[in-house]
Length: 349
Image (cartoon, rainbow, N blue to C red):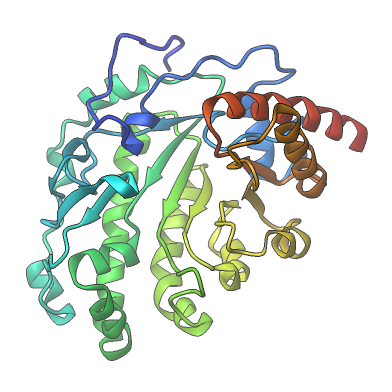
């Protein structure tokens, strides 16, 4: 295990892309009663932390340059599966190029979908670079992007993917099972070469602003089996699971605990109060702190928003804060979140 971070290694990812940002070396977190790693472990495990963690700021990302779920280094091009992606500046990320179709028909997936040869990749050399950035006082996370459903609608138009789930469910289930096999093998490489990995972000978007893509019955029949198999593997390796799934997906939460998910980062279109009150003893949540985008916000105003957030969601633990704010406001928020939540939990104990 590395004990010192190599500050001389620069990121090869596209500047300002998510991968680029996650490869930046963070300042050490000093002066805490326990390490940020142990504190966050308690949140995942359902134990009471000493303070409420701030999402992303208290972890180190393992963002491998060799995992090509997107094109190399987030520049326009093709991913492992032959899907063409383009950078969309307004979105700050990559999107499948409009009109792209790699899979002609779900019934032909065995002939047309070519999986990457994960055994031919020089994982060791890349891991030496990525692990040199690790801070051992922080948890290390690997983000398993482009989930089994996302990969289906990246290979074919979105509406065709949904139609295939209704018209040819047996072929879709076969495809999902094969994709789960691939995901498990990819994770085995990551866990071997990029250790230590403490938790995995399982990414697969399952909804829109209005509702989930699937009925609960279809979710249980089509999405659940293969996704759970991947998650079972993650848990078998002693890792925690955070779910990244955009959309109004709160109707699926009863399945999340069964699947082994320890924490979900729901978008604010979900009912955070209901989720905390109804499921907060069963699963941890990372909610968005609202109101920090006001251009006229004052320091005291920002601090009060953080205090109100802690008062609302910190009870009993199992809570983390997503803070999106300009740098000068963010610094204030992180300071208030640590100090106020530390006192909150001291009193609660």
